[in-house]
Amino acid sequence: MATAMSQLYTIEDCLLTQLDKISDIRGNLTYIEGKNRIPFDISRVYYIYDVPAGSQRAGHAHQSLFQLLIAVAGSFDVHLDDGLNKRSVTLNRPYEGLLITPMVWRIIDNFSSGAVCLALASAPYDESSYYRDYDQFKVVADKRRQSHPTNTVTN
Ligand code: TYD
Image 1: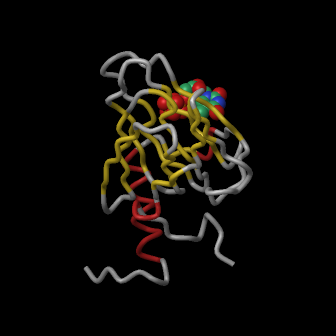
Image 2: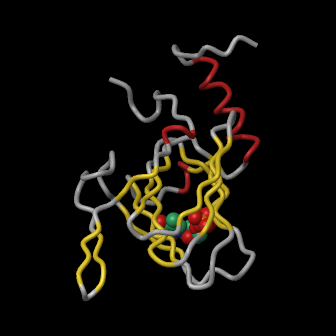
């Protein structure tokens, strides 16, 4: 069975997921329950807020961690990079979550005033699971891609 460590993830696997939104005259409510809508058990929750204008967060990748990012207030941009391709996503709806798979470098910037980035994570915080050096991440990502059975890169 493929594990997060052996699976080859790309930015195409970082899907934008619609979360349930319950609206009535008192306002809106969105919930996330267990594995409903997300492909991992939630082990940790953290949130980023009071981000000064022009600041950038993240700038790292993880060996095996899955995350779901939600703009529960305001908006921000998430720049995804699997070592081969890049894609940027603007999060600005509290009922949308962006899945970020293992081995995807992410940078978060362009925070609006009052933005809150909620992050659900599949494992407890573990600094040793981070790639914080882009060049090191790229070397590992390239090796994984080249050695993967589904690799079709011929150069
Ligand atoms: P960091 O990973 O630099 O935040 P960002 O997502 O913007 O890259 O984390 C900032 C600090 O917070 C760092 O010292 C590690 C610590 N931290 C925890 O203790 N627990 C956590 O769950 C997270 C995400 C960070």
